[in-house]
Image 1 (tube, rainbow, N blue to C red):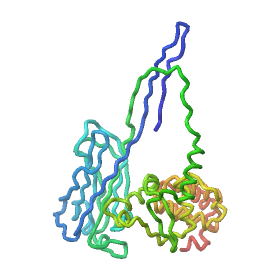
Image 2: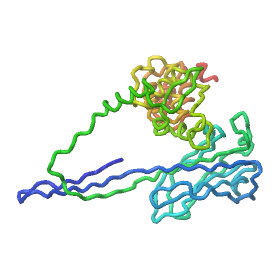
Image 3: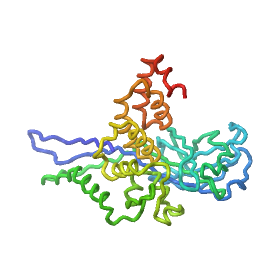
Image 4: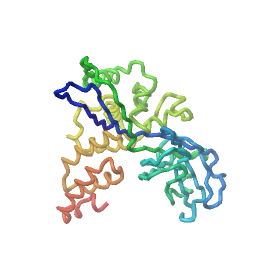
Length: 339
């Protein structure tokens, strides 16, 4: 949110007690399209199946379109996925993304770009994913279930208000560190928790509303038709307990008491966990901190990781490229470069 205020100043003839506020915001909508029995879905090339309107922002609605056989621009065996604005009164600029999830709610592939939408416009990705990958049980695609998820973030929404300025002093906002401290107590105590994270045979008591609001991955896991929503237990097998504790601490408080950057192995594991669960603020923080401790011996490995994570780790990627370019021959001799 980027508020801009215009306050009419006092003049020698008196004061004008009006305040005009223009607030420029961005709004995000998220929708899903679950297809049971995906392998039996038949459509001709260029023929989509529609979710119907699943995303609504203001007066605009979007649907997800899946082309099981692709279109004329797709290679054989590849599908196309797009989002289409089915209603809306004006032109909107938006960042949209399309992802495919397995039955456990894990994102297996995701693409994003910016476009301009009017009612009837559709934008998407040719050659989005191979059909055979959606049948791969090793990737978690089971029971012939495929879930497509789309998000649309409308940019530049403008809200203009004109109001009288109150002569009374405005109430001060509660200091943000008070909120952080209170949420830390909630995290430490687990009081009124309604969900468990099961890691390394240990159960951490957490609050689904906080995890869902801070991580789209947890939000998807806790959707009504997911196993985790029914059992109220999320089993985590690929991240260790210490890293999950750090991740949750940041989710609750927006900061960390410990400084994991002093141990680059821990910092790297935390960066990967933050990326996996789409805790973007922590991804950027880890990226910024790690980028200050880069050395020639490991810069190639960090560059690969930053490239895999994407835009949220852009600082780390940029610093890696700078260091590698300045020491190219030494970097090419490292184990990380050879791998």
